[in-house]
Image (spheres, one colour):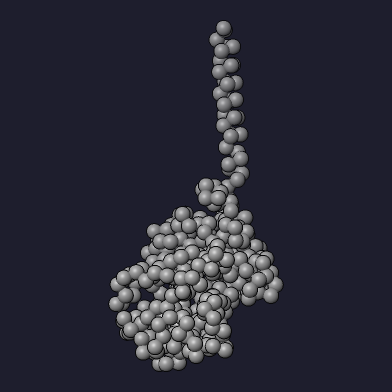
Length: 334
């Protein structure tokens, strides 16, 4: 074959290979998510004494560090039910919720008179655990003993309101007839228990959590945790697949060195309004899952916001936000 002919074919082959390479990479390049534009966002959390408020601060700080154009203001609220209603009314763009309340809100069930169908899941994280505590001198050894007593269910709108009523009534004690609810924020709950304003305090939160640490640090073993009757809990879990059995780990609280079994938990999830831009949702999920060590340094619960738990409490509960879904699928998590 003449040299010029070989040279022509060699050049043509090279150009063809380059063209094929460009075609191969073109879809991937086109699929890359654009950086988010500057935005001011509100994140609904919990009362100041709850776990979600400082966790929200840790996440907002991390996201703002990686994407300075995303300015996230952490809002103190009444908790999960309050957060969902705030999102329904377009007051916040981001919020923490629990899987069970997000499930009910999206379907207009339970505490929600109508569907809150603008909520979308971003990422799942730590589980929050039933923690109902009383003091030895109140003479309460079980949930059944709460008859005639006053129980703080947390601030109005928090998850403890609905779950506390549900679980105590499942033991045959009707609210406002057999026992009286009080709606006291977590930061004030410990003092209310010690001062005799209430006979028991409920916090459905991570372990350890602030007000339970406060109570046990001063009362030690005189602080008694009340767990649901096992048979009652069996039935409750059978009807609610988003609940899982749990325990309070030994050593989490002063003078409670052994595991305290018999509790239950539900996943915490980070949700967004469906109007949140896809690139913003993508950036938030990417930041939280790819910077876990940094998040954990800012808040101990960061260790539970991992790729292994990223879809917990969202998959099969509410729809994912398209931006979050894109990231999770890219990483093989969906």
